[in-house]
Amino acid sequence: MTIEELLKPRYKVIADYPDSMFSVGGIIIEDWQDADLWYCRDYKNEEYWFPKNDVIENFPHLFKKLEWWEERDFDLSGMFVRFGALDKQHAYYKLIKPSDYRYGFWEMGGNYTYPLHESFPATEQEYDNYIKSKTTTA
Image 1 (tube, rainbow, N blue to C red):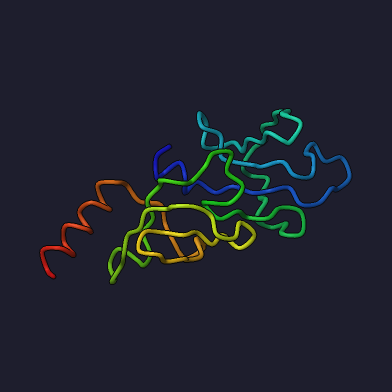
Image 2: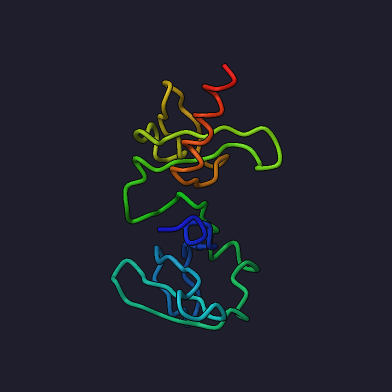
């Protein structure tokens, strides 16, 4: 999965409402073929599409915006992350294992534990370049 795909907005259905087509627990994402549509596959594996003009951001009591790392259906171990904005001082780490899933804390190289809500996904090349820059300046 690319960084762009990881950063696409996603929402979790957290409450029911009259005539809702979603099941509580469903994850809503931007459709991969049509950027004007939202797509949802709920916990029963049923699929739904609806237009983006239905602005789900206006209903935080029904839909929770997910962080890039939350509620993924794959293991994040071995992925690379960046802390800090690209135009400011930043650092890269490799995710080792979860420390506390509830709060998004992960163990990373160098015995560090950080919350992922302060991170951005990164590539292995960015991580390697960062490590090389640290060893050449040390």
